[in-house]
Length: 246
Image 1 (cartoon, rainbow, N blue to C red):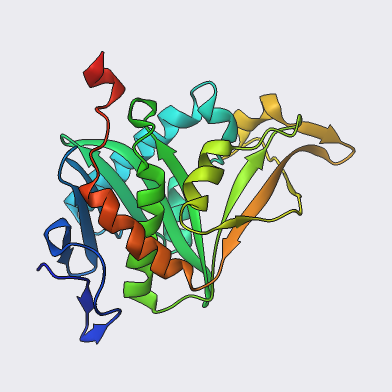
Image 2: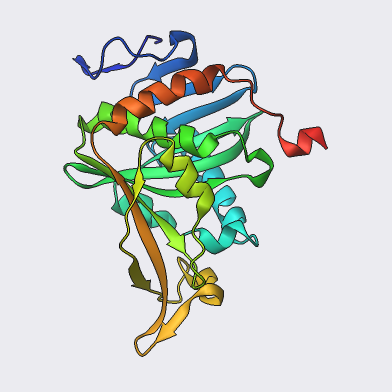
């Protein structure tokens, strides 16, 4: 099914969308957006539903682990375990190029009215193509399709002990209208699969090792920003991936 926007269970979510109908496809509760120049597709889906989504979930996890275990980008990645997706009733977005997963993100409702974006990771060879922003936008559209309008959307970005922020994520989600909160929060590390990679850049007090982060938040108007972002992104002439150029 193709259309100017999406329609699910006879409940139209938004009419007169800016997205070109040639670049959006709806399969049940799955959305597909495509940049026709670079051949990068964004597919949002519910994990663990069938053989295809099981494979995509595993491939997204492999990319996430690769970025997490890398040098510079890995310092900013909050870990996760596979059962987090199930416990949170999360959906995922995969960025796909030539059958390869080059970006991933998952999203869920913390509360009935708050959408949370988590676990964004992009293959460094595909940096500069605004994939993270596009995945965040696709997540918002999919979430509204499933749950209806949200009152708030939020994500967390890491702040290192020297004050360095995860600037790529700040810029990516800022394009969609999320604003950085001034307050700095902390979370203590447990030394498990989720967070052991963060010990090298953690801080320590009498309670143990911890990391700092700041939230980015926005209200329901961000949905319109997300919808509007995907239209030009779908038509943009993106640079070739670094590995292709090299």
